[in-house]
Image (cartoon, helix red, strand yellow):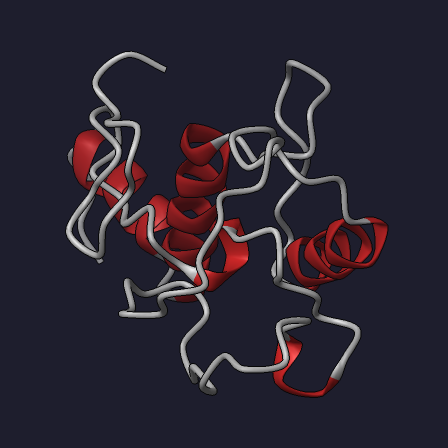
Length: 128
């Protein structure tokens, strides 16, 4: 990617989204399946795997820029969306349509406080 130096330091950020790049989750030694989540035997423990750190053993993964496919995360997101009544967007992706969610939330709020009926009666000139 253009704009990213060959050597990624603790202060290097993505030129597009401004996210830190020297983070555990983008390192080839990162492995969430093991204790400490790092396969390097000498690396110090890093608590926040998504924040920039000073690890000298950091080596970027070749596929670090690619979106990860995590079925467990996708199913968890779908369950959470279902809990809050968020449906998949019209494009067929798992990303919710924020306008539809906002519209639905507004309708529920209006129904909760009977605002729809009060607004209709005010528009017709009738009173309470």
